[in-house]
Image (cartoon, rainbow, N blue to C red; front, side, top):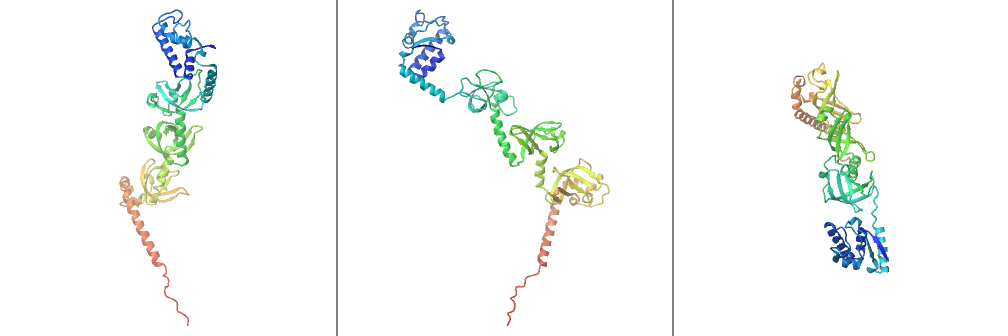
Length: 404
C-alpha cells in the first residue's frame, strides 16, 4: 500500500502510530532543515549525495526520498506503510483517529464563548490561542469595553481569559475574537442589578454637550440630560472628570441605552434632610411679591413666603433676594404627597432684621439657630404633653360600697 503525503500529514500520522514512529519522523524533519540551511539543492539516497548515510535508517522504515530540492513546503515522500503496521492495525488506527476528530471538533461559530491564552499584543490587537487550527486575532477595538487606545495596557501576554468568536469581515482561516463583548455583558448585568434596586450610583462626567453630559459607569457610557444635571452647562464643563451621584431613568442592555439623573439623586439625598427644623441649602429661582421660590434639587421648588423672610417688616422681596442667590433656610413644613415645602429664614435670625441688614450672617449661624429652635419646640411639646396628662380625669380606684 503506497501513498503520497505532505510533511504535515506525515507528522500527524507519526503521532498516531506511536513514540517510535514520531521519533523517526522528527529525525527526518530535523535532517531536512539542516540540509536546507546548508543550501543543498538536492537530497536523495539514490544519488549518494552529502548526508545520504543519515537517511539509511529512514529509507528502511519510510522508503526513499526522491527528487526533493530541500524546500519543506514541497516535500513529498513515497512510503511503504505496511513496513510499519499491519493492514488491520492501520484500519483500527484510522477508525480511532476519525473518532477523535468527531469528539474534538474545532469548528468555531460566531457567538461561541472560548477560553483563550494571549500570545502577543500589538497596536492593532492581540493574537490569542483558542485551540483552533491557527491562533485567533482580537482587534484593538474589541480588546476591552474601556475607552482606551492603549492595547498593551489592557491585555498582557500570558493572560488567560474568556473571549467570544465574532464574524470576520474578511476571508481566511484566522478567527476573530472579542473580549469587549464579554466585558460589556458582565458590566450590563451589574448595572441592571443596580437599576432594579433603584440604587444611587457614582458616575464620572466625560463630556458635556448642549443636550447634557456623557458619563461613565461600570465602564459603560451613559447620558444625563440637561434637565437632569442639576447645574448649568458651564458648571458641568468645569466638573469634567469629576464624580457625581446619579439615579437611573432608563437602562436597556439590548439597545445599549443608559440614561441617568443627577438631580433626582440629589432629591433622594435632600429628602432625608427635609425634617421640620432642619437647615437646607437652595438656590433662588424666582422672586414674587408674596415670596421667593427656592430650588432644593427636588422635583418641585420650595416657597420662602415674604412673612418668613425676616422678623422686621419687608415690603419688596427683591430688596433682600435675587434670582440665582444661594441661601440657607429652615424647613417649616414638608408635604411629600402634595409636593410642598415651606421655608423660613426669620427663624434663623439672631436679631430681628438680620436678613435685611446682613443675610450672610444669618446663613453662617443657620445651624446654630435652627438647633436652638428645635430645642424650644421640643421643650414646648414636652410641656404640652405633661399638661395633657394632668388634665386627664383620674380613675376612681376606691371599691364600691357593698349593698346591705
